[in-house]
Amino acid sequence: AKTDLEKYSRVADIVKTGLINFAVILPLLFTLNQNALAFEFGVGTHFGQGKGNPSVAFIWMSDAGMTSFRDEIYWKNMEFKPGKIAPNAKALLALKAFTDANQHDFNPVLILSYGNPIYDKGSQPTSEQGRQGFAAYAKWLAGRLKGKVEYFEVWNEWNLGSGTVPKKLNYGNPVDYVKLAGISYDAIKKENPAAKVIVGAIGGDRENWPWLQDAIKAG
Image (cartoon, rainbow, N blue to C red; front, side, top):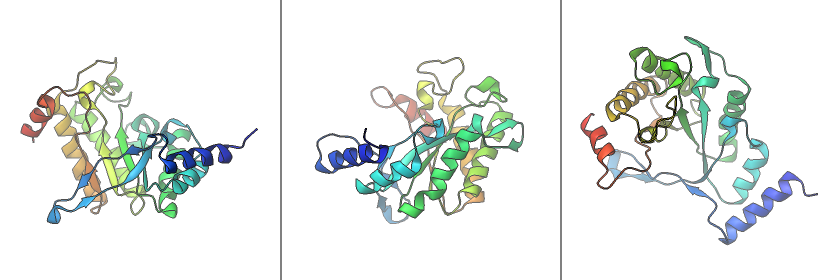
């Protein structure tokens, strides 16, 4: 039987020959100064869900010419008592992956997500207490990973109801999202001024982007 490394190496060969469209192209990230554009070629991973072996994955990612990966460290796996951050095993696996990333010259994106049962019944944080709790979690990660992670993404597909409990499709108020993004941005930048904060990662918006337009109007 082939080892994991042998199987992953075969995938890397396929990616390099262009036989399949395997890699996820991460968002084009604009900086405000001089309209500079940074581009990363990477893959979506789920170390934050306890899936995969970062040490093995990093080898074939490097072989495939990737420069980044996008993963999550779930809030619910970080805070079990209000105000006390105590990462569980899944969060620690992802933390190690992000910590080790720059040893392989990767520039990863960390998704800050989703709800936490001790705030807003585990759904999207729309209360002031929930937003403050989420911002504290974001701040902790920004500090812990300072010099390791440059890009922090506030939630994923809020507009589709991601993180709602119970799941509500096509739900997610843009005003609530802007409030969460704003307080999270301030918390991250206070802890790590060099960090770049990604907001507005949405999916399935209708023609003319009505949800995104409403979010922009909200601030």
